Image 1 (cartoon, rainbow, N blue to C red):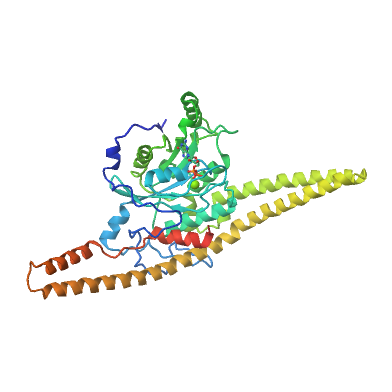
Image 2 (image 1 turned 120 degrees about the vertical axis):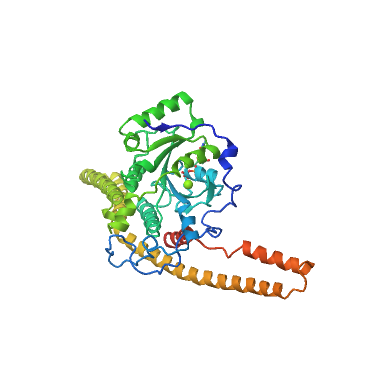
Length: 438
Ligand SMILES: Nc1nc2c(ncn2[C@@H]2O[C@H](COP(=O)(O)OP(=O)(O)O)[C@@H](O)[C@H]2O)c(=O)[nH]1
Ligand SMILES: [Mg+2]
């Protein structure tokens, strides 16, 4: 049974390929990305959908993964990048894991309120010669956003990523080993996670257990075994090639887990295939169906409750119990509001997603356009600066005087610093922010 545990790693080895931790990125700031991940030169027209079908009314995103014409250097850079999404319930430690591994400084949760209610992309970092990009996702139990909103956001992000030619090398699901809640796991989050991934990508999935220090080792190990061997817990995922790994809150352990994932062959997640290749409406996707089933179930329970309240109400009226009648009336109003909310959530699951995805695609296309212009302006300026220095050097009287040496140094510096590029994930991050808000 593939329950992998952490082995102590040599911290020097852990960092030997990478620079020291990169400059920290603050939440929602994507400006300090400086690698160009996607083929920006691809025209922002056409259909990214490999099936050739086009979604009705959808803005076609740039077909980066169907029409690659980027320079060989860029291609190599893209091949070198590893994208990994981190999922799990709110408060399970997703953001902490990402910060620990990447040196990012995303806000982490204190108390019950969730902090990450948008998809955020961590500062890329090097690991074993690969450029690792971690994606932080909000849980399906956010205190500020509905599950429908969360699903729409994650789906739009993953679909746009795939349309941009990016596949995930793995998905991490974080679970607190110290968690002894009824049923053992956060069923809603785990179900949604399963439906987003689908069965065929489970070999690229790692269930990371953390917070080992919060509970006795004996208890935690027994818990780990139970989680790995019972059908209602993680066994089905492990049976299909997923792994379970321990995380001891250190950077070494986080990177050791990632080291395992970066070897994977990237795969298309079920939600990406459904939305992009199969052109499904979000409501028709497995994750959408799951969530809707859940909402309808909630609605059914509320309806039962409402029916019971109506009986109580009749009784109160019969008995002329004015106080009880008023109380019930108040409860009914509350329940009705909740039912309206659930109904609306279910309806919005479909309608608003298409809208948002369209706007996101449009935004990405505009950004590509702006980006192309910006890049061109920067490249032109760079060329001019270089040419002017070369010209000055040609005209220099002596090869060794201080002024000539300074010119040479300036030229060398310039050559070492070509204009920075914005990068695909920077754009996608901005588009997500713009459309889904913070
Ligand atoms: N002891 C321990 N606490 C952790 C660990 N990871 C996260 N936490 C704490 O758990 C809380 C929630 O973490 P956060 O990363 O915000 O969870 P998220 O909602 O999944 O992103 C914070 O108070 C963290 O300090 C861990 O590995 N060990
Ligand atoms: Mg978080």
